[in-house]
Image 1 (cartoon, one colour):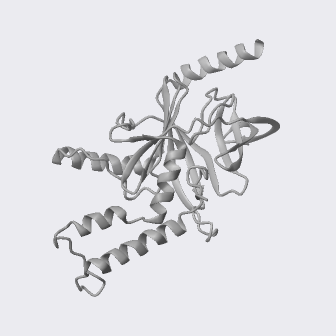
Image 2: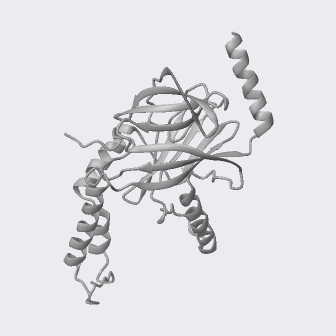
Image 3: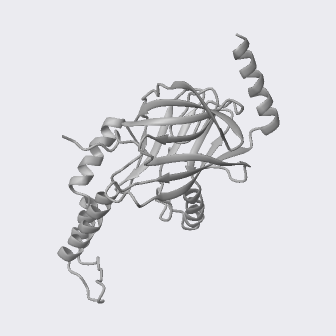
Amino acid sequence: MVRKFIYLLCFILFKIVCGQDKIFVYDYQYKIDSLNRNRIDQETMFLDISETRSVYFSLQKYTDDSLNSDELKKSNAKIPVISMKSKIQDVIIKDYITKNTEIYTTLNGDYYKIQPNRKIDWKIQSDTKNIFGYKSQKATANFGGREWVAWFASEIPIQDGPYVFSGLPGLIVEVADSKNDHQLKLISIRKRSIVPSNDFNEGSINVTTEKFNQLWNKYKKDPIIKIRQVILNSDGKFTMYNAQGEEMDRNEILKFKEKVELDKIKHNNNFIDLILYKASK
């Protein structure tokens, strides 16, 4: 009872000091290609926390989407836009009222909303260390086909964290899987200067984890099914040129596109959530 009261008091004090205008900035380093473990990609991620929800997204994606939004407004178009510079397309929303977590992601040009509904069963350890000036405590869990080690700061009494991670008695300031393929670490707490969009749900296709996995495996078998339909139904109006400036026929274009997509699949194989992208039997 005393512990709960202290936690509540800390939470109230944190709200008074920080208010609702802070964004927690994480450095995300990951190895997306298990065939080349020397390759380490990096992206700056934002965790925007309000009274009713949190939104986790890439800074670069936000920048790209803002620019795209301005262009769409000028053209009056209403289509979902895929961020071209950002390597991380996912947006994660955690609703504090309903306790639901939603993953928004893209696949083969379509925009999906996934509700994983997979509870993270944390095991809190006694180990502590200092991270970003906060005394942080260790916790472990299995999620998405990986073993995770997280560090949470009770001094920041927010039961949230980057990606889908949440549910610890303090903000998760660092989390990494056992192979260090995916590492997220708090690097900054800043005053909110940007406001994430509320239109995440617009144009999205609602699917379960299992359904998305089926779509992923279908895409791997034929990654150019949409491109093929466009080219074959183009009535000769679709043109493309090779490196020598020579016009390519339809079969050459399809072979080229298929090679590009298959190569992308081959070297993007080590996702943060292995359950979503597991290979079918």
